[in-house]
Length: 67
Image (cartoon, rainbow, N blue to C red; front, side, top):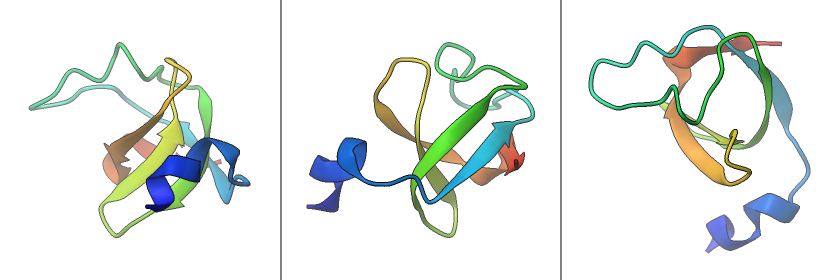
């Protein structure tokens, strides 16, 4: 149940959002292109970051580049 403590975990790295052009989902409400975000957890496909809503959300890695 690691997801219950993500807000309190240390940031593993920072990533920069490069676009919010999603084919399937609406992400421009939670992400801003050009802004840096704290990565709380990472899998092969997703970054789990603290987004613009202040909560941890999972997003595809293709929206980001390393900061």
